[in-house]
Image (cartoon, rainbow, N blue to C red):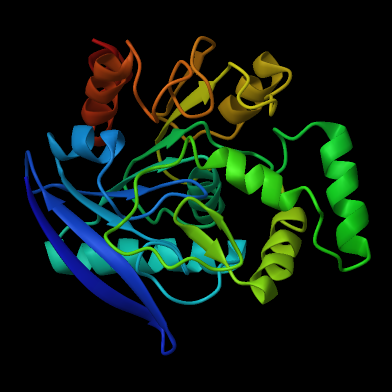
Length: 285
């Protein structure tokens, strides 16, 4: 697998680290990771690169990217990278996205078919849906006073155990979630963007494979799993598929490393078939 590193500029003062992994075929697929991930190779990238040419990005101020992260500029940057990949590779790429990255992709797909096919792993309808109600109340109360919640540092240190490996260079700052770094002035704008983010309510405009994870993770539980799956079904385009994975946690694992479980080979084969345009019966085979 050949790896190439490049830099894109979605805005004049922002540099995005983009990595391309030339693997199993020339068909391009953009992989968008969740909060704390970077453009570096991990199990998801390696498995996808066995079938496709994979393009990944480090969100602003993670990996070797610069700038300050908010949810809105993440959505903007994902679209920018997808459009750049289409120009570079001569074909609009498929998209695989996880968690907050999947939310960002779903926000795009509510409004435009920016990719021919997408696979959303543990996607969020609402960016805070996994949080216990008391945590959401506590965060909103702190943000109403324009104050960073004291629990933020504890949560960020806990999540470093689950997030993808780093790019070559990490630059420590005021707070970090693995590779995602926040200077002191970055935290409040990011949290405001999270807690002001709208819920996904419009049908997606491209066929999607949605894998809904069921097990709790770090005390953050997706409640009412059947209701969540039913809502996602109501938002799917024709030709979409959905599966509930009750035995896997939010990181598509069984308490181990991200995207590593006994079901990983099966899920990889299913995603690869779906992204290539197989029918539901073929991609499940």
